[in-house]
Length: 169
Image (cartoon, rainbow, N blue to C red):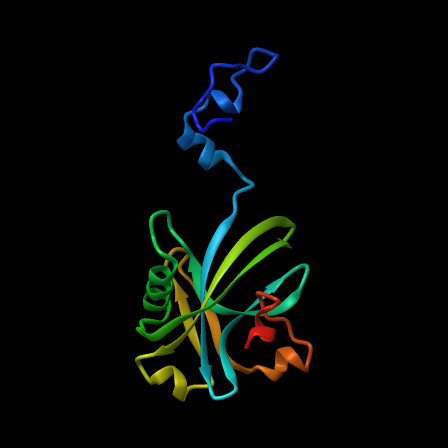
């Protein structure tokens, strides 16, 4: 396909995906790749993570961050997500790496590219607490943030996503 809608139709006379405007193809495509910006914030040997659950993995942890919007650079996404979810600003942001993962979450196949950055928080209050609540403005949901020792993932078998992240740290 050349990126433009074609005039071909399906054999049964129904319009094919190629007949649809590009915008509707993008929104109807359930097999898209999601780009996510994640921030690795450290407190000595601990990482700031959120805790979640899935049918496949049980309890797992992931650095904070979120989905990159079209036209937004991933480092800007990272800053926006920390601002929205924790009301904090980031400093000393630096690239750590890029990971790609295809996985199943709650029965749905997912494909994500993770742009991972190291960073420090400008505000000191998160460093002074062992756990606290974050807020996802898009869903109105709260989530648990906590500091976990890196050894929990490298030695104790707890799950951190992206899976290759502990070996980088």
